[in-house]
Image 1 (tube, rainbow, N blue to C red):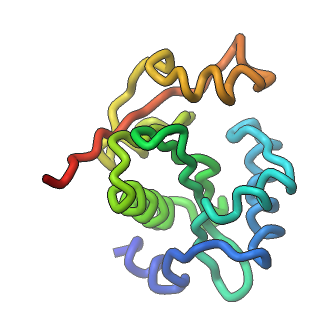
Image 2: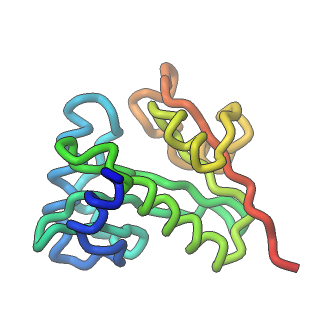
Length: 164
């Protein structure tokens, strides 16, 4: 019941627009400062804005996430965040389900994420896997991360059923 109440207060998931960048950065900087997310620059968010989906309350971004492709077969859910004062109300689930729907529409075979909260993703059908099965991620992005040699994030994977 609480999830329905929380969801009804906020807008539906929508594609991010340039006016959302400050709100995305506010969420991102909050969680990056706590060590729960890797930092991203304003330039990076702006360059990848078309990958982001947001939920807002008025003009305030209260939840967001992005779907970024490595190959036609593999995409990653990144920068998934919900304002800390409304966590647990189903907004993160809405964002992830929207991103999965986009991946399915684009006929992506697998969607992965690196997370500190694997149980959240498990509830959505993801399985914990070894990061090494994603050389596209590890050698394309992770290799440049300050945590590369001591990464403590957990890899999760959802294999999508392809339509025949």
